[in-house]
Image (cartoon, rainbow, N blue to C red; front, side, top):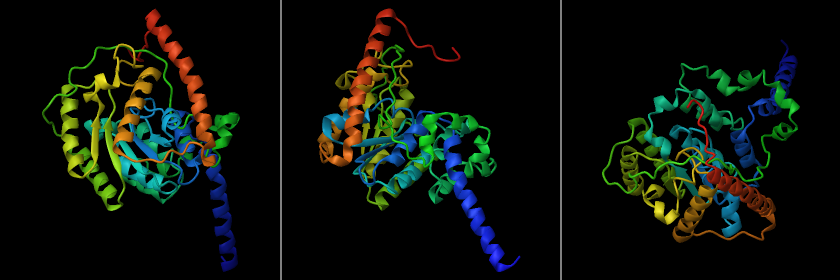
Length: 357
């Protein structure tokens, strides 16, 4: 092949691959995780004050619009279901591409679980890798999270995974994802209006320590080293839920590691009364995740902690944050309606049904 023809071929292939990017972004499975990550990429550069990273004890627990409306702090969750600790460092790297947050908040529930158990369903790993924009960091994330024995190619080029998902093109809402920058109306927050009552756990505040799985401890120490090396401020939290004594003791163990590294550790399971959490009413699925009422309480508690321990500029009234004002107004309307649903369900004892039970 002549040099001129070769160059033309390379250019053609490059253009063809670039044309496939929007297709790949659109056909990725739709849902709240996709919307949350796409929404993060849509935020204006260097406007986010707090990035929250972690699993599902993040996005239904902490209302970013509520926090904004009451403090002028812009917080956004880069969270996905059953998010493995192995992802956290790479999500920080991803966030740093477009944002310079004053604080990272990491939710720690998944650190109590063995990584081999979290890898049992690789769909949860895809919840991270398949919701990142194509980049070198995405490749590094896949290499860190996907064993070489897996079909890494379908992770690197997820169009191979979703090539039959052409129905996404029929959804007008998905066309906004062609650049994977589609604004999130509630800034990543997910409202739950179900009720799943349970008894209040007795482990909160218990003493004693229990080591976490060694691979998770290694991931935690690697994350802490990265944060220190890059002079990034961080807070490590545990959201309230129906924890066991073993869980509580593992959080005590984590707390020692985090505090030794110079960061704060806030286990909200030690503060049920201060939060005002009611396990019979404030959870959507039997003490695993809060409903909208519990989310309001957890957000208020976290807000007070942030204001007492960190400094943030109140950016309300700043023209760069008009979308945040809109999100706050929408949240007030949607949350009020959801709270009414929760109250009705409690009155009627209309409780959530867990699949498989």
